[in-house]
Length: 434
Ligand code: LLP
Image 1 (cartoon, rainbow, N blue to C red):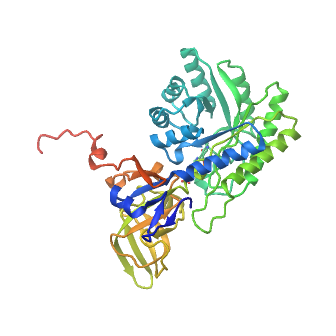
Image 2 (image 1 turned 90 degrees about the vertical axis):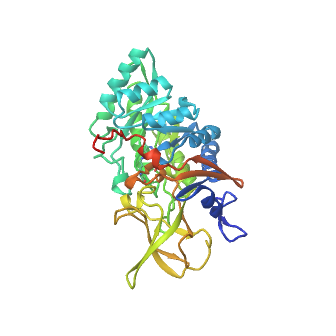
Image 3 (image 1 turned 60 degrees about the vertical axis):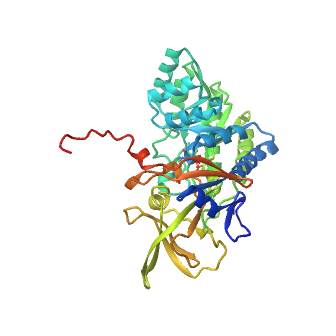
């Protein structure tokens, strides 16, 4: 992936930096991001739109991985972002990110979060439900402001992916349902509120999607809806088809190249808008995973092992479900190599266990690996999306550090958490008998 190579010392190198040196300098577990690969993805997405000559916006779904440095990278590369909480807005604000290019998502944004978004200058609110329309309108009335909005539509399409990460199907907590007419009721309600500047619609059908069929069906449903609203005198300026482009975690995964999803989407929207005699809206996409997953590699130090002859060899590392819950939560598959011998021939099949007190805390099952010993560094690939961002302090293990590497340079972007960091919210009122 990206700039990964085996260097002269025979070690895995990323961004021109030796991963063993990174492990030595910053400790493990460590998440390493290949900045050049993130930039390449962004450039590829933009290139598709530029080549097609259509108006567009690429917004990165912050939830996949966020940090001040990430927002700064996005700003520098001229992409917007979607935020889903006050915390993401805050982090973007700390980064000096131009919030006018941000969209605020969520199925239960609080009044405080909406107020914060309006005050901070978030550009677009993606309205999800009727309660939120009222909340936002009240806030805008109080602040005497207007704001751009999109309506999130639940198009009733199931993308073939893990059921926990499907979002566009009919029975979903997100958005205004299309089939029962909620979408049009919401449209009429928003149109009657002059402080809400309706610019178009949004839908997101799921995540880790391998085919374009779902996007085609979603685009078709959205265009049909917009054509109907056009009859009611409304011309949509924006059609946001969300994210969800799949990535290759292991050889079993066969996604399209990230830009090919976008190429198909542009073609489909163009054709369908023309067929419906609809002016072509701006096409917005919201990739999260496809922008950062492959750019991320997790480094762990190998510790203990447990050999069950004829059954399994467990090899334990110093991280696990606290820094990457995806295997435990979604049965997600990953692959890994020894950072000191990435190309050595495997001599055994091991299963990589985490250090957390839970049997389900496994990172990789049945991984062919060369001979390893305690202290060796394991590099697990494609961990850049929904790893750190879903990290926890389970068992009071500190969350890992994160570094950006590029052109032979490494830069710490998130410090390793300390024990004190984890205890600092605890109220320590010693009872008198202690
Ligand atoms: N837009 C919206 C409205 C979303 O809900 C999401 C993801 C995205 C964009 C970005 O989707 P992506 O391009 O990253 O697939 N934690 C799960 C994934 C949850 C995705 C939630 N929404 C995982 O680790 O697989």
